[in-house]
Amino acid sequence: ATKITPSPRPLPTPPAAPIPPSSSPPPFEKGVVNPAGAHFHNHLSFLQNPRDAQNRPPSDPCYDPRTLYINYAEMEKVQGSKLTPASKQWWEMKAMYADTLLFFKTGKFYEIFHMDADVAVSVLGFSYMKG
Image 1 (cartoon, helix red, strand yellow):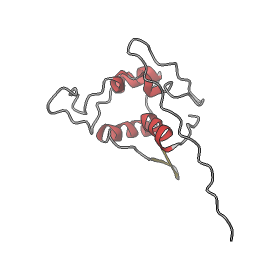
Image 2 (tube, one colour; image 1 turned 30 degrees about the vertical axis):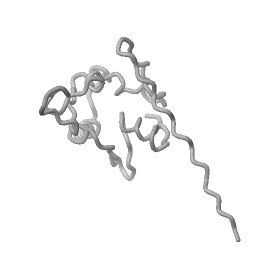
Image 3 (cartoon, helix red, strand yellow; image 1 turned 60 degrees about the vertical axis):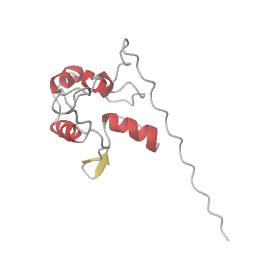
Image 4 (cartoon, helix red, strand yellow; image 1 turned 90 degrees about the vertical axis):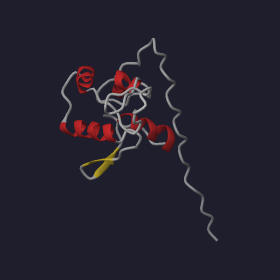
């Protein structure tokens, strides 16, 4: 009888340590694999202090944690350029489904972006890709 051994699975990367409110996240670089905590989305204040899609704070009795307020002007300022149509579409979907890990189809592949990628790396054992 042939013994089947499972292939070794990589251990999940531990999530990045929370950044103290008084400090800023490490800078991110375009076109390279950035370490956890140094991505574009780590520099967005609307993600550090989230509000729902109606711009209500968590203290509001009507706050909906399933949605997310997106500040497009801040994103373009941090990124230094306008969002691509695909990126804007992803953020529009994330605003409606903030509590859901989005698999976004790009060409014939599905990709995971921004804070969803952090979850995929820490929980599912995925690896960050260059981009």
